[in-house]
Amino acid sequence: MSKDIVKPSTLPGFLELLPQDQILFNEIKDSIRNTYEKHGFIPIDTPLIEKSEILLAKGGGETEKQIYRFTKGDTDMALRFDLTVPLARYVAQHFSELTFPFRRYHIGKVYRGEKSQRGRFREFYQCDVDIIGNGKLNVIYDAEILSIIYYTFKNLGFENFTIKINNRKILNGFFSSLGITNSVEVLRTIDKLEKIGEKGVIDELINLGLSRDAVTKILKFIQIRGNDEEKLQSLKSLNIESQIFQEGIKELITVTNYTKIFGVPEKNYTIDLTIARGLDYYTGTVYETFLDDYPEIGSVCSGGRYENLAEYYTTQKLPGVGVSIGLTRLFYQLKEAGLLENDTPSTFTKVLIIPMDESFNGYAIKIANTLRENNIISEVYFEDAKIGKKLNYANNLNIPYTIFIGEEEVKNQMVSLKNMKTGSQELVTIDDVIKTVK
RNA sequence: GUGGGUAUAGCUCAGUUGGUUAGAGCGCCAGAUUGUGGCUCUGGAGGCCGUGGGUUCGAGUCCCACUAUCCACCCCA
Image 1 (cartoon, rainbow, N blue to C red):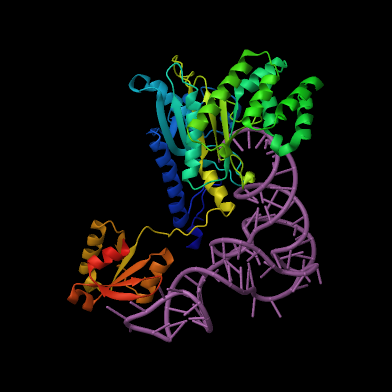
Image 2 (cartoon, rainbow, N blue to C red):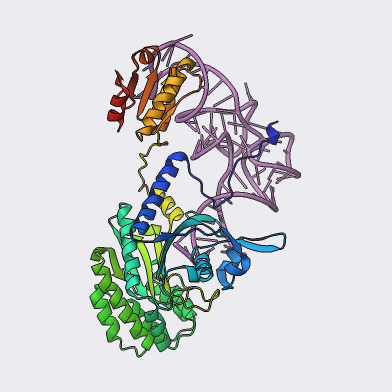
C-alpha cells in the first residue's frame, strides 16, 4: 500500500508558503498594489502562456536557454519569462484602444528554467509598473518612476534604502568616445565593481582586450565620487565629445531635479555611474534599489527606460520607462535576513464559535452570520471533539477570541466570549461581542 | 553550461576506527482533565538510513555509478 504513495514535493525553484507566510506575502503584495494604484496605474493581466514566436521575437541570449517551451498539438508555446515582453505585445496589439501615456501595473508569476539556487526561483512574482508613451515620453516620467519605487518601499515600512540611478547614454557615449565596441561586456564588468573590486575590474577589462589608456579612463570614470551635484560636475568636466554622452547628462539632471520635487528624500537616491543592469533593452535611465542594512540581498527592484518597447510587434514607436520588483526573491531574502518577524496569525478568523454539542449548531451558525454582517471574520467548529481540542484549534491558528454555545447561552440568548490571550471569559450579548472584538 | 558539497522519522539533526534490535528535540495522536486551551507529566504511531551495485564474516558508516538537492561561477529579479 505504502508503495503507492507518491512522495509529495514540488519542483525545485518553485516556492510555496505555509498559511502564516502566505498571509504575510499577500500583505506585501497588496501594499505594492495599493501604492501603484494610488499613483494612477491601471492593472492588466496577460496569459501565462504566449506563442513562442512572441516571446522569442527578440531572439538570442539567455532567454532562449531559460525559457520553458513546449508544443500542444501544432502550437508552439512558452511560459512568459518576464512581464515586459507580454506588455510590449499587449500594447502593440491593443494600441488603438489604449490611451497614452499608458500607465499600467502588472503583478504576476513568470518562469525561468534556471539552475536553482538560494534565493533564485524558476517561478516567481514580478511586480511591474511602467509608463508607455506614444511616439515620445517625457523624461520627467523617469523621475516619477523613481518616486514610485521610493513610495512603494516606504509604504512597505522600509526607511534605509537607496535607489541608485544612472543613464545608459552616459555609459554608451563614454565608451564610444574610447572606441570601445564590445560595450555590453564592459558594462557587465563595471557592474561587478562592488563584487570583485577595482583590481578585479581592471583585470577583466584588460582581458577583454581594452587598451591601458582606456582602462585608466574607465577607472577614473567609475571613481567619480561626491554628492549628485558633484558627480554631475565631474562628468561634465570629463569633456567627452559625444552627443549621446551630453544627452545622458542632461537627462540625469532632469531626473534628479524632478525626483526632489516628487518628494523623495535625498538619502534615498543617488547617482551611481557603475550600475548598468538590464542590458537587454534599457537605453536611458536605469535604476537599482538596495536595502542599506542588507547589501548582501542585492538589488530588490530594478528597471529603466527603453526607447522602443514594442519594435518587434508594431511599427509604432513606443518608448517607455518602468521598474520591476522581484517579489518572490524579496520575500525570501527578507525572511532569510530575519527581517520579517512574523507575528501575523495563520488565519484571518477573529472569532471561533464552539457549539458544545450538535444541538447548538443552529444557534452557532446564526451567531456567525450576525458577526459576519458586522464585518467580523468568524467560523464555527463543527467537528465532534473535546473542548480542549477545539480550543487548541484556536491556539494553533492564533484566533484571538472564542465563543461557547451551550444550554445556558441559548436559554439567555447570549454567548460566552473568551479572550484567548488573557483566558478571561464572560457571558455577554452579541452586541457586546461586536463591540469587544471590533 | 562549468566546478564543489550533501542525502538517516513529517521537520531540524546525532549516530564512535565498520559490530547486536537506528537515536534526540520539535511536531503529530492518546491519556492524566467528559463546559475550557497554552505549561507539565505519561504513553503511542511514524525509518527498505536517496536508488542500484561493490568491498567485507558483517555497511547508516568504506568504494563506484545513478538520482535528487544545496552552494559557487555564468546570468538574472
